[in-house]
Amino acid sequence: EGKEWPAYGPDLEELRRYTYAFYGGAMPVAVSAPARVRFEGADIKANKAVWKPPRGAGTGERWLKARRSSKAQLRRRALHIDPLLTCLCDLRDLGPQPEKRPFCVVGVTMEDIYSAPSDLFVAGMAAGVSHVAGFSLLRYHPHIRMSPEHWWRYGFAGAPSDYSYFEEHHAVDIVPVAEEEAKENEVRVRTLALWPI
Image (cartoon, rainbow, N blue to C red; front, side, top):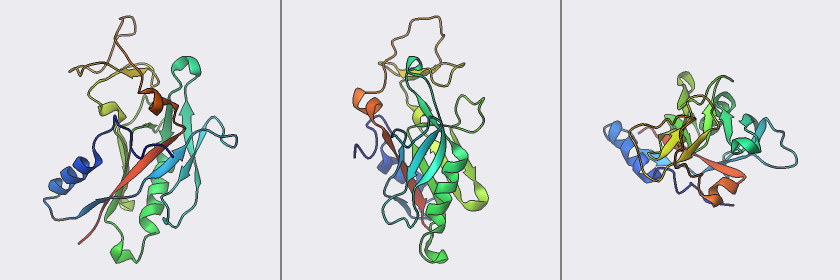
């Protein structure tokens, strides 16, 4: 099944504690079981991915819109945010009685997300009325170096820097995500549920 959260991702317990502190301790915060997004398989087209909700979520698999770069472009992939928000709405709305549902559900992933075809990436997006949001934490990695022109052109340097972009014509010490992470065909999307008191 692979790892539940990539080693290069932020610590989810620290993220939970930060969110709890942000709300002044007035709202409990829980990290839920992971949902999975599968990009590979005989049944999956190039511009699709499959959402597999956490066990017991009360909803089935769904198709997601995705984009992929070619092998020559490092085999990068990104998820379209709109269908991802719909899946997060399902997780929130299919819970127990309305008064026991989380105040909001926040999905976090270490995959790129995008909204418009021209987007390099988006950091996140919310559906405020539905009380859901999705965030990609990939581009916040302190060692990331990325192209300002091509969404698929990024890598990780050996040390952090104050400047995350690199010039296409300069040689930069860029290393790909760890081999075992790059080979995974599934990624995990974690939902951070803010529970009402």
